[in-house]
Structure formats: C-alpha cells, structure tokens
Image (tube, helix red, strand yellow):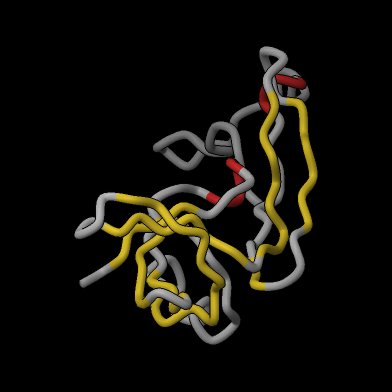
Length: 125
C-alpha cells in the first residue's frame, strides 16, 4: 500500500492531531505491473473526467527504427533489464526505461504502459 498525506509527527516528535479524513481528490491507486501475454486492459476514469487505460498484459510493442525512420509492431519476447526494480527483469515486468527483447532486436520502453495502455519503444543499436 502506498502512503500518502502529511507526516504524523512534528519535527520535535510531537504527534499531529487528525483534523479531517482523506478526501476523494487525495485518492491513490495501487500500482499494476504490466506483463507479457495476451492483451488485457481496463479503462479507469480520473479526476477531471479524463481516462487512463491500465495495461495488465500485452504481447506487442510499437518499436521505432531510427535508421529507417519508421515504426513497426514487434512481438515482445522477454525483458532483459529493468532499472525500476532488480527483480522486474526476471518476472518480465515492463515499465518506462525497461530494455525489452523484441522480434526486431533490443528496444528501450519510452512511455508508461501502465497509464497509457500501449507499449512504445525505440530500437537500441
């Protein structure tokens, strides 16, 4: 669970009194790990009436090829490296900055798949 809000103690160590409950606009949601597999998404409404598309699993990524200046839809084989967490690579969790192995080669993920509902990557040469 993610902790949100102000500290429970002052710098002296004294406890703050709780003056109200949490508000709807202070809502936080659990992090969803994007994995490799058959595509599964969920649309959630956010504050302001917009939407975020939660991506649970996906098999394909949009990979940009800098040498050819075009984008191809490539199949994801596995996650090679993920700096977000040491165990994400072995569990095949895809986050922004993760290096993935695709059918066209190694690529680095450039967007946040958990919040955008798609995986965009750039080929690493």
